[in-house]
Amino acid sequence: MAGMVQDEGSSSVTSSPLQFFSLMSLSPNLGSPYPWLRELKWEERGLYLIHLLLSCANHVAAGSLENANIGLEQITHLASLDGDSMQRMVAYFTEALADRILKAWPGLHKALNSTRISSMSEGILARGLFFELCPFLKLAFVITNQAIIEAMEGEKMVHILDLNSAEPAQWIALLQSFSARPGGPPHLKITGIHEQKEVLEQTALRLTEEAEKLDIPFQFNAIISKLENLDVNSLPIKTGEALAISSPLQLHALLASDDEILGKKSPVISNNSNAVHLQINEGTFGDLLKKDSTNGYSPSPDLVSLSPPSIATSARMESFLTALWGLSPKLMVVTEQESNHNGSTLMERLYEALFFYAALFDCLESNVSRTSMERLKIEKMLFGEEIKNIIACEGGERKERHEKLEKWIQRFDIAGFGRVPFSYYGVLQARRLLHSYGCDGYRIKDENGCLVICWQDRALFSVSAWRCRRYD
Image (cartoon, rainbow, N blue to C red; front, side):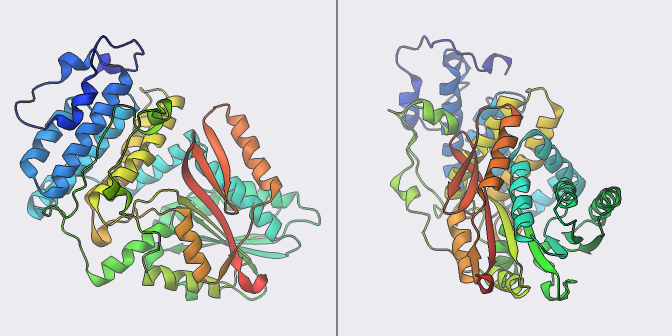
């Protein structure tokens, strides 16, 4: 793999092997691709990896396990956890496809994973590293905090409901802002939701220490619960408190609840029900696509038609948003992944996930050394686990059901919320933070009165603000 870094030398191949990709079929006689791969530019090698991955995924979706096995073997010769961004990303998609195949044999799958130690603390660690190394969540927190400060102007009793209270840095910054508020800070109460008691205890400790240092009246309520099990009506919301709700990357998981309740579980391996035939033309994938305006990556028309514009009904989501509306919040700020990973077919989700995670892997490639252990932990324990959940899981087990902003706008509108535009000053603060980061590639764009945070031109996270229409 050492010889497969991004060498920009010109290829000596007179007729690019990429033109033969659509004619190639995976077979035991294909042999090692190394001889001619050494003569390709890194963009072409990355594109070849994607071709192999999509071909293999089509075989998995169609239930052609022999061909899928051959494809997985081919990919493992080229993918690498310490290679370039494309090699690293494909390695995790390959693992996800293999895991999906194994789920067809529950006994085998359980036996192979019986000694695996899965720790929630690993995921929390990876999210903390992602928060530190990439500015996406920091930007969302800056935008959220400024919206809260503006909505709570003049309020003496402020209550914040944090639907994922795992990162105290956001509220430490808010405490500091409130301490400088003209007329003095409000009495601040935060109710934090998380399924791990230790996380809430650590958050409470840090926030209480900061509040004492700033001499701000403060109270922290810890609610140990998964979001789907949360009883909104039992929350300690009192009359006279001005309520703000913060939901960072949480709501999409509720879309799995209906499948879980109804016991619906799509078959992992089926006969052609999920197969979509994608065509790859000479060009590049993800960020590389933008370098070739003539020959790009073209999904088949069948794939484009898979995503209906309307939202799927979700009784759990509707009831949850209705319950939150019943709390009469002055403001609710929602951060979500800006991609559609909730398609009904494997190939639809895989195609969307490839673009989304290609941008995230490329972001790390541009900012963090390939030898960084922190980068490896983010890719393995955060990106890799999300990819596996999107690709390998079905039914209630599939929690990473990311959807785009347009669908969240429809849901909140139906639930009785109205959009709150972000102020010029809030956006200015976010742009200043980006500028201080000293790295090109990050962008903030306005979209329908909401904000999307991008890497290059790829929108990755959305931030939207809402309030009950009764305040309009």
